[in-house]
Image (cartoon, rainbow, N blue to C red):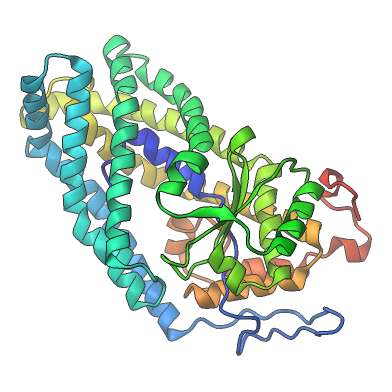
Length: 437
């Protein structure tokens, strides 16, 4: 589903997705990876970055092609809605059903979401189900995949119905300053998303429960305490029914704060690797990366909405007979907002991804400083490369427009080299740790 969620929901998803877990595995030792740990002392040589397999290269190249296809499709669908007059017809149909303006917005959004869901379904099915199974990256049944798609549509429709009227009300009441007020409201909206997602949205898609390995849970909570995270609760989520991927994260605020491990991570990573992964994710939380992302994304949205404000009026004036609406304040302008936001997003994407990579790098540093386990960190990234069919040193297209994390080759190199404690140098984040080493 690419078009059913309005601007704010899209932004919230991007913001929440950024702090992803760094590691994935396929076993304790990786053949041909030059990983050589001394089983007695735990010391190691440098961990070499393995060359990508032919299967990984094929997955990488086809992924770049699909990225281009997605980008073109994301522009084509809203453009067709606009220039064929479909969007204006949907608004006219909604207006015939009710005289209440807010219900017109809701009816339009539900209809628009349903149509775009159907249009997107073949590509989504290929990318999210067929392709993932073809490369051995998914365990999901077709029924589970279909149910998740429907749930995702339902979540998008509910959130859109609850919030879409806000920017359109601002467009009606303040056509010159709507972009400013809407951009400022992005901050509380994203805070709301971060608060409710762990409790109300995530459990719709997977089962969350207490950790089965209580010894590991105790060590994770001890690490959280050392990182300065109080009252942490550890959850194990059953993701093996969906994927072979590995993930872990710390999210939420206040009462919704939680530490989450996928069961695939527990099964595929050894204890030391898991503790580094959790140290990395705790770094996101302790270093305030969620807040930084919220403010950064809100600033980008504010600027983007201003540019849309400056350009949308000219397009409506020139093509209003084809669009079948007269003002940006008409809800039929939603595809125009999506189209323009998509175009301008392509321009700002390199900067946004660079900022995300910076935050991920600093979380890698935090994880290393709190664990001092360079070998476990490096082997975790090697496992991620091999299990997730990743290319450790991809080309410029991937680095510039697709990569929100540092590339895996660079992360392994950093884990091999970053050892300030061995040289008696101060740690960047050492002052944040309780009971510092």
